[in-house]
Length: 138
Ligand SMILES: [Zn+2]
Ligand SMILES: [Zn+2]
Image (cartoon, protein in one colour):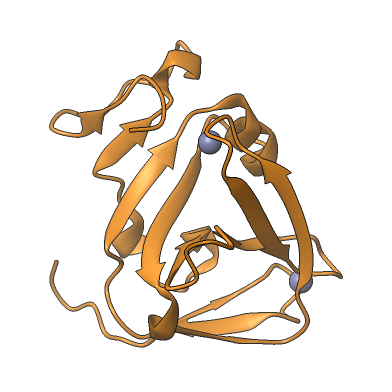
């Protein structure tokens, strides 16, 4: 991708939580599971897997978690004021974060190369050609 300048700044909807991403994500995926549809209030959510060291957060973050089908704990951080989801994490894998990157100022980097949980996908959504597709969690 051309002309992407790091760091890229991000912020929640109200601006109380801000962050900077210092390097390209390891991978970007769209998840079509029902939980992500609820979370995004849309057809899917986008996740950018990043090294924990490559992102710096500022401002208060609230915490919530649920147990995923895999048995892993899905931790979630969100803005206590506007509720905007900032990132997800697995407490057993602290070196990586799953950034919810739609609130970055440059969203060109969040074009998903992988679509997961397409078994729960909305019928009207067409997976772009060339993207990797998985029925569930790969
Ligand atoms: Zn906020
Ligand atoms: Zn999901």
